[in-house]
Image 1 (tube, helix red, strand yellow):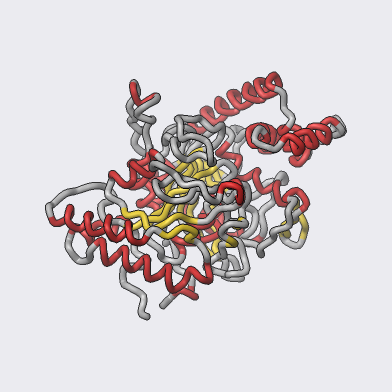
Image 2: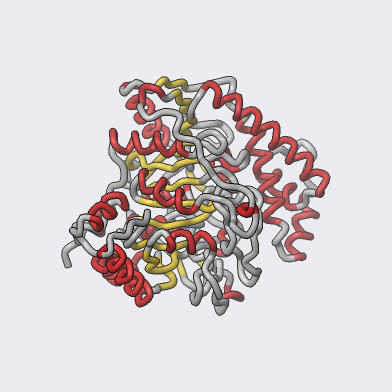
Length: 490
């Protein structure tokens, strides 16, 4: 069957085509459904299908378009990460004990994208408890990378990144605490935006069977994924804002405009590697090529700065605070064992693994001290962003690796230029933006020699999400972006 001319278009392009009556929402939705039915037996990105309701929503969208209605996402098919509640569909977070949990109402972010006119075709696969950069669980199985089925699509929004790369609609939404938006985007050659902390209200992005109440999960955010940079802003503008039953009773959102709209006005710091978590030759190469290209078009570029917070110290702090939050949900026996192991650590062990272990057992007093460290870190970033508009740095150290489902992540290893490194230490690069709560846009920049996608993240100033998003748009326009996987050219 021939590929539709619409399968890999951006949301902005599709929206214009819908308005111009060149295509209907039903046609776009049916195309996404057809592609899922043809290809998802191999990829396994869509774990919950909602095709009948999607086609009903598409028909309603076409009727609205015929009446001349305008909404930001009207008629556009999209997928949603499994971890969001959608009324009438299961929400499991990959946890076998929750396989029969059915959400009673839509999550607030889902309501917002639906109110903006989108058509939800299904939910995308995740790892157990959203806790891995691979997307597999005992309920729905393993999601494969569309560029190489033997490799990870990333996680925890790996089903969403694989769905985008395979042409299952132009948009998706996911979440991020350890890179869960940016890492899958990196591994599947698509785009994602981790918003400033707490910019988008998360009610209903809740592990079952907890009630969908307003709830601030430390470090964690939700955000958009797409195949084009401009599409991220389209969805972020719909998702962003306080919860109307919580802070939204008093507060309204007004994001500042991007600092600049032309390359020549941007001041950018570029980092390609660090001893804390080295990057491989391919990742460094694509970052250096991008840096050379940006300099050529007039970006004011620096390759180092004393203003950059100490990466080793901030990475250790991130590991402690991340595992303090995640460890609160560990079963009592696991928590007790981790606490005992943390007490046995040598005092001078400052490895990232040791910090993760200490984090699980962190006392409230120690957490408050760590939070003070984060406050000082945010102040350092504020100073840096007086001199620079954005920091371009790695998302991950290597391209997508073969599936590795060994149960203890701390014992897994990745190979960086032939040398083994601790799997979980990869958290350091996503953490550079997560710990201080900064916005970060992940963009594709090309391919490794073996044909696997690679990219970078553009970290911006607090609540100035439009600045990294604008730079991402300029880069895509000037140097290109998403390239569909060859195996799905049909």
